Length: 429
Image 1 (tube, rainbow, N blue to C red):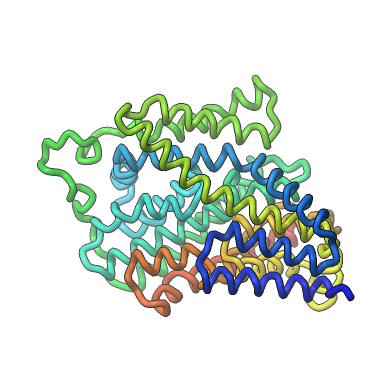
Image 2 (cartoon, helix red, strand yellow):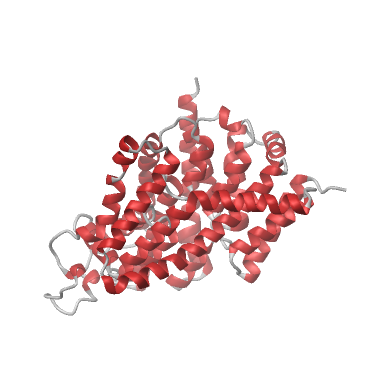
């Protein structure tokens, strides 16, 4: 007798959760195992299961392979050449408040390097020099983490937003989407920054970002108090400058355009890199990208099996019979995020589930994307790899990390969901 699809889904999520928490193995293996388990419980033949896994893996790699590899190599080249410090130094000349600086730096970096965790790791050694006490340093790390997650979950073209945009956008331009999500995300981040400022004394900026300098004449550009570090910003500038020729000269679609501009950015980063760090940085960046890509491809495999099983329509019918229709995307995303912890995985699977239903036709695409993004922020706890990274980096206990990371991010998720409802209400014909 076949196991009901909802029971199969619950068993699969429990399996992924237990494997992830207990064994801490790569999510790729737990997600592939979950795909096999769900497919067999749903009555699919082994051949159908593995063909579905191959299809899911291939489709996700085709979308994200170039994007994530390019972002990871750019990030590693910045780190190897101390250009992250240069970027933070440039931002700090304009933003003197350390809390605001940390949140904004995390917010900016996480989009072009295509990973919020990578952005946090890049910033951690720099922010550690700015605070004077452990409490102050940790406060900066928390707000940097929150800033990186907020932009990563909301701004096109991150790996979280791309599958949502591809599934729900229709004729919506990504520029229109970002014209809404950027102000909304900055507003949410601004509220969190204010809350963090109120948690303790606002400490003035010091010269901590110069602590690694040997003297005032240090030749490291990050140690200079004047000038703009154009080489550090060059890959990001090229990414932006590549947009007009990609659209107007080459006539690229949105999917092709993001590949083109990220390739332009990484080529720029490689060409201007110091020869002595180029090979090492590319090798390390490729290794880091591989870990990310495999995890996302695992999510694609599970998402493909879920869609092929017919679960999507059943889920819509049953959940919409209990909750209002507009809560369905938010709740499904929150459930999947709770189970496995990756926002990209949440976006891929949720997009696969909802695209097989009538919901995208009934909800404004911007609202729908915001609802899923909001759900991905609601429960960022023990299954979230970022939670454990912050726990190790700050040295704080789990209750403190929960208060300073999980709860603020949940509040951000609720705020995003409310914004999505407002947009939906405004745009109802």
